Image (cartoon, rainbow, N blue to C red; front, side, top):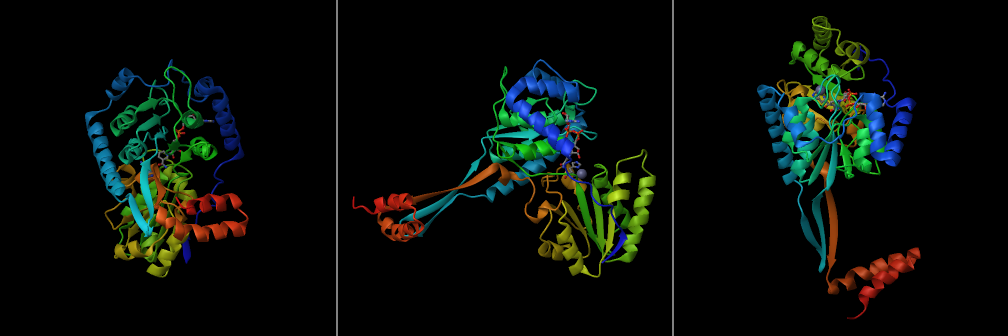
Length: 424
Ligand SMILES: NC(=O)c1ccc[n+]([C@@H]2O[C@H](COP(=O)([O-])OP(=O)(O)OC[C@H]3O[C@@H](n4cnc5c(N)ncnc54)[C@H](O)[C@@H]3O)[C@@H](O)[C@H]2O)c1
Ligand SMILES: N[C@H](CO)Cc1c[nH]c[nH+]1
Ligand SMILES: [Zn+2]
C-alpha cells in the first residue's frame, strides 16, 4: 500500500466547548421549557416569534414561494425514498413459532409512537432531508412526526423548499426552532399554547451542537445514529474515468472542511490522473469553496496491489459512502462488509443517494459503519417479542428453569415457576 496523497490527522469530533454549551442548553430547556427555548433562539438565531409552531396559514404562505420545477423535483425524490422504505418495511414481519409442544414464541413490529425530526439549515439548505427523516418514519407507520428546522438566516421562516419537503413528507407539527434547543424541546416537550408534547425518538443530521445534543439526550429519548461530517471512499481500477472520480470526491468535499474524500486504486496511472484532475476542477470553481481546503487537508489517494487488498483497506476505513468504479462491481458487493451505503458501477454516484434515489442519506460516519447501517424504516419500528404457554407445556419448561433459579439462589423466580406446576 502506497500513499499518492496523504490526509492530515482528523480534528477531534466534539470539543469541550460544544459539550459544555449543549449541556447548558439541554439542562435549561429541561428546567425552563419554552422560556429557555426562546432565550437561546433569540441568542443564536435572532428569532422570537409569538409561536414557534407554524400555523396552516404560515405553512401555505411559506410553500407558495417554491418554484414549480423545484417542487416537482422534491416530489420525485420523496416518491423514490418512500417507495424503497415501503419495500424495506415488507421485510420486517410478525411471526409466531411453536418451539416446543404448547410453547408459542412470537415477534411483532410496532412503530414508535412519536418521532422528532431535525431538518438542518446551513449554507446548503438540503431539500432531500425531510424525505429522509420525516417521510421514512411516516412510511414506517409512526402516527406522530414533529419537524423542527431553524429560521433561515436573513428571513422570517424555514427555507421554503425545505418547508415544502416537510409538508409533503407528512409532518404532523412543524416548529421553527434550531440547534440543541430544538432537540431538547422535542425530547422534553414544551408547555405553551399549543404545547409541544414530548416525542419518543429524535433523528436527523445537523451541526456539531445538534449532534452533541442528540448524544446527550440519548436515554431520555431514542436516537437514530450519530451522523457526523460526510465522507466518501471510491474504489477504482483503470476502467474508471479520472474526471468522474475527481468530481465525485470533490462533491462530498463541498460539505465542509471536516469532510474526508479518499480514493483507493489498483492503478497508479488512474491515481495520478485523478490528482491532476481534482486540481484542475478546483481551480475552475467560481468561488473559494469548502471543497478546496477539505480536499487539500483530508483528501487521500492510496495505491494497492489488487482487488483483495482494495477490499481489505475499504473494510478498514468503513466509509459512510462507498463507490465501486471497477470492472467487476458484483465481486465487491459480495466481498465488502463495512460501509454505510454502496454505489456500484460507473453510473451510480453518491450525489444520487444524497438527493433521494431511494436509499437514506443519513448514514454512519467516523467508522461507525463497522457496527451499524444508516437510517432506515426499521429504525422507527420496535421488533418486540411475546410468549404464550399452554398448561401442558409447564411440565416441560418449568423443571429445568426451576433448577437454574434454585442453583442461583433466586427463590422468587423459582417460586414463580413452581406455581405453574400446581394441578388445576
Ligand atoms: N449528514 C447529513 O445528512 C447532513 C445533511 C445536511 C446538513 N448536514 C450538516 O448540517 C449542518 C448545517 O449547519 P448549520 O449550523 O448551518 O445548521 P443547523 O441547522 O445544523 O444548526 C443551526 C443551529 O445551530 C445553533 N447554533 C449555531 N451556533 C451556535 C453556538 N455558537 N452555540 C450553540 N448553538 C449554536 C443555532 O441554534 C442554530 O439554530 C452542517 O454541519 C452540515 O454538514 C449534514
Ligand atoms: N452527503 C450528505 C450526507 O449523506 C447528504 C447530502 C444531501 N445533499 C447533499 N448531501
Ligand atoms: Zn452530500
